[in-house]
Image 1 (tube, helix red, strand yellow):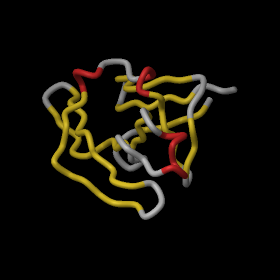
Image 2 (image 1 turned 180 degrees about the horizontal axis):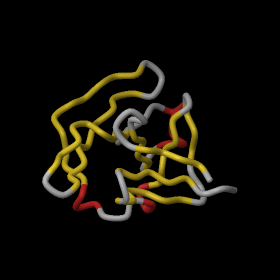
Image 3 (image 1 turned 135 degrees about the vertical axis):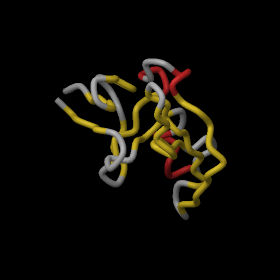
Image 4 (image 1 turned 60 degrees about the vertical axis):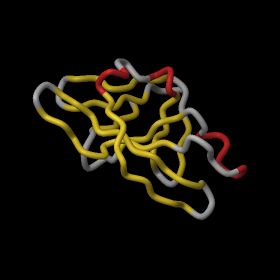
Length: 99
């Protein structure tokens, strides 16, 4: 399997040889996150009828903060259990590639 990488500029946020893809988004296992200190919990929450409630992280890079750059489902519904303990990134905010 190829490697999935999420990065901002030269800063690699996540890298994994195994991941899940849902609705065109790469969901990285939490163990693929390079530095959890880069992630700041956000108050933002959204709801998906088949995945459940999504919670968000903002990503700190140097002096900048990318608001709500990543999301995850802490308690996904049964149909989405494959993405439990996984984090996805907005492609408009974070470069996600599969090489």
